[in-house]
Amino acid sequence: MSRGDRRDFLKQTAGLAITAGLSSLGSPRPGHGAENDATPPPEAGRYGSAEGFSAPPVETVRVGFVGIGLQGGGHVRNFLRLDNVEIRALCDTDAARAAEVRQWVVDEGAPAPDLYTRGERDFLRLCDRDDIDLVLTATPWRWHVPVCVAAMERGKHVATEVPAAYTVDGCWQLVETAERTHKHCVMLENCCYGRRELMMLNIVRAGLLGELLHAEGAYIHDLRSIKFSDENEGLWRLAHSMTRNGNLYPTHGIGPIAQCLDINRGDLMERIVSMSSPSRGLARYAEANLPADDPRRRQRYALGDMNTSLIQTTRGRTIMLQHDTTSPRPYSRIDLVQGTQGIYSGYPDRIHIEGKSPAHEWEDPEAYQEAWDHPLWKEVGEAAQGSGHGGKDFLEDWRLVRCLRQGTPMDMDVYDAAAWSVLTELSERSVSRRAMPIEIPDFTRGGWRVREPLGIVV
Image (tube, rainbow, N blue to C red; front, side, top):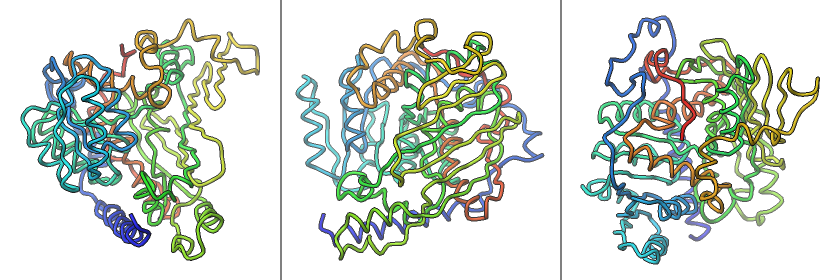
């Protein structure tokens, strides 16, 4: 792509980001309030039932991939290592990349998948096929909802990279389509499958931390070089920073702690207050690293360097969530859960349990590894070695296929995808209104009261 073409692309994408952000303001769907307190729990057998939605088992999972760049290609690699999986189709706007990934499949001795490379909407032809059970998308963010909706409406289960959506309307569209079609809509939040995060969940479920009162999560990752790259995510991610100011990527931070707090399964995120620091990092990076005639040096960037959001749940518990992708800081997701009897925190990993740990001192969680290592890592951890993001990507794909084959509820369903993703637009609304509290929709429509907490999945 030439520099001129790239400028045009970024302008177009920036306009789409603005349109998408504004389209959901004033969404008529229910949020929180007295009227929702009267909402009856879902009837037995409905998508939002207490046990969670399950579909008939699929003996051999036939999959089509939409978006097979770096992350999408990683999922293809994982699926090639899974039993009872057939890769039937690959879709991408980059025909050369699609041909390359198809060769990976052939090299493993499997039939060559069909390619769909006729433009941005060629995924519709893929979704029209009747020999695909699962569509997995790892496209740029603005295509997640269109791909997922098209696939569900054509009878396919779907899995999407994060965030599942970035507008309130998009989140409701996923929920309503999943409920209407009775198809799985799973957000692939790999951080929920980290070894330390799953051990944290195991310790919480065992009651070692007591009653949980507070949690903290974040996505702090210096992405300046990636955003200004002329390939991969650089082709689209920077445009969001031009027009949007809030937490643009909340799911890595909220996912693991939301599972510990039983969000959507006994508790609910009720309201959010968000504020952002000034925007400095992208402009400074552009000035220091781009040619003098590059228009990105003169671009005004809306995204504040550090966004901090405070969330309160219906049960009164508190959550701090942060986002910073433009500062020279080492990576962190914080991953902290605080209970009446102890605390577990990441980056660096540490734990303190009253009555077990030395008074007023942290312990290394490694001391608890043998007793509280999650059974999923004990079973699949060795196979996960060498896969993306320290094995987390393989475990999430392995669990997705296992649940489809066994006909059991997913670890993360469409209500989780919506509740975690909707924080993007809601944080933007709060920032734009000088940290005004914004109500968070109840996508379960009262079902959170009866839905069972996530167990220790295996």
